Length: 134
Image 1 (tube, rainbow, N blue to C red):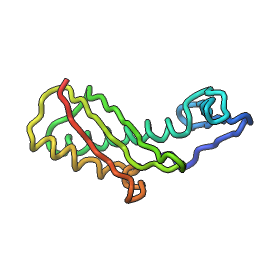
Image 2 (image 1 turned 90 degrees about the horizontal axis):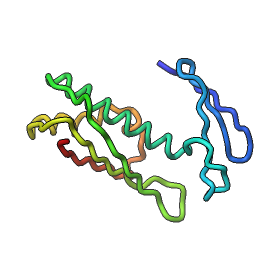
Image 3 (image 1 turned 45 degrees about the horizontal axis):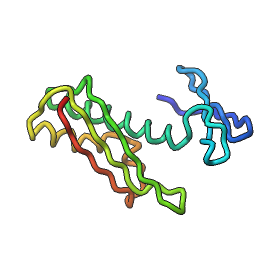
């Protein structure tokens, strides 16, 4: 498991981070925040990490119950506070590759708790999950 990430700040609201197994990735603030927009923003990476973590956590729960969700697509819509850099809400839509029973959907809802990013959110951050079959 990864225990260390190195970030190099390049100036002009741009940085790069290095992952031991994946190489280097650019990060940039959007132009609206004084950056160049080079690479995803830190907020984009956080939200993408959350979405990836949640869908993988749900798959862990699904597999423990005898099914999987390979092929699922997850869309996450964050709601940020207007006057502060604070995440208020994360709305999630999970498009599943097939129809699942209500019991299986309950397993997926509870699967969110296996995601360490979800578990690290401040308690006041509201999260919602909706399901749809492809």
